[in-house]
Figure 1 (cartoon, rainbow, N blue to C red):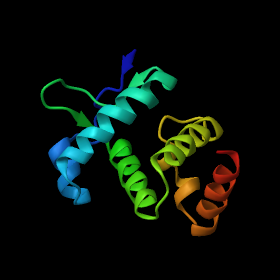
Figure 2 (cartoon, rainbow, N blue to C red):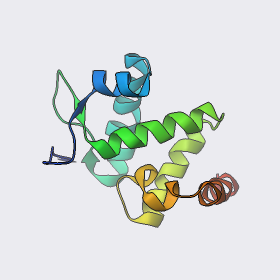
Figure 3 (cartoon, rainbow, N blue to C red):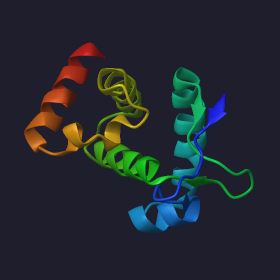
Length: 122
């Protein structure tokens, strides 16, 4: 499995940074990264979304993915549906970061259409 590497201009955010920026408990951020991005999503795409062992870090796109995932959870969208949405949109947009895709985030109506589409398929 390949690892997404830090790139100049791509941002480097530790789990503490992500926790602080998004105002989320560090344990939740760590759980989501380990359980979803570095486990379930990585298996499908063959890439790890973090680097480092003791002090993991992620790039800007993963930070945005965490934010959108969190907001969808705040709107009572289950983890199961969130994960299905991530998989469907990753395939549709042909990207490793579907929740950070400008086409998904530029217009509330578009986002609602995608979520409605996903709810029908899950």
